[in-house]
Length: 124
Image (cartoon, rainbow, N blue to C red; front, side, top):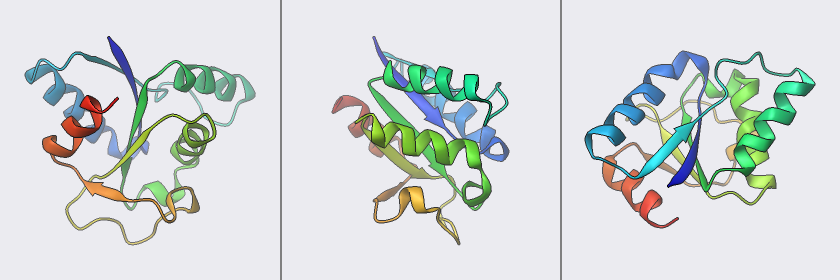
């Protein structure tokens, strides 16, 4: 079973919960993990998070207006790219985000549809 890391600003936790729910409804053969229960920026958190990201086959990162100031998810996204983990960036809302952090500059951000998620998952 393939593992997917989900990155999100804590204010966007509903997006993570909906993703897991949708995957369960569609009987997707993937498991999901994140680091939302830890306090970011502690060295042990970063070490544990990097190991968890490296153990995954891909990452889905939710992007919203909250992402710009969410240091934890920005670090997770940067880490995934550094480790060569495939990343799918998804807008939480149809209107996208007003400000994007440097970590996603120049990257394609998709709208959150099950077709986009499914294509990413099936391509891993």
